[in-house]
Image (cartoon, rainbow, N blue to C red):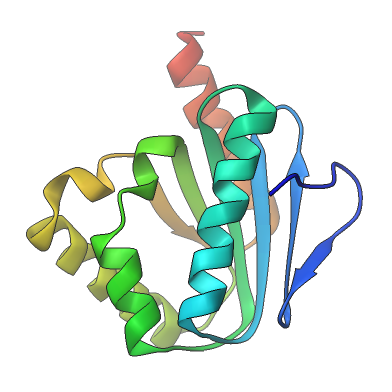
Length: 142
C-alpha cells in the first residue's frame, strides 16, 4: 500500500498518511474491525517500503470507538512491531487508554517479541511528535 506524503487516504472511517522520512500517521475514527486493523498494518508496511526501513507509528485515537475482539486478537498476535522504531498514541479517553494498555500487556505476556519497541500514550499530538523525536535522537545517538 503506497501512501500519500501529503493527503490523507481513507480506509473505512479512518485516515492514514506517510510523513517523510519515517512516520505512518493514522487517525482512527469510529470502531476498529478486523479489516481496519489489517489495513493499518498494510499501511505500516507501505510506510516501511517508502522509508526504506522501520517507521514510527503515530496514532490519533481521539475519535476512536470500540476495538472489536477479532481486531484486538490480530494486534496481539501480530509481529508488526518488528517494522517499528516506536509507537506514539495520542488523544483518547481514560477507558480507551486502559483497554489499549491491557492489550499491550497481554501481547507482552502472550507474544513477548511483539512489543519490543518503545510505546507510549500521550495527551496531544505535539507531545507524541516530541516523543518520536526523542526516540529518533536516541536511535541516532545524538
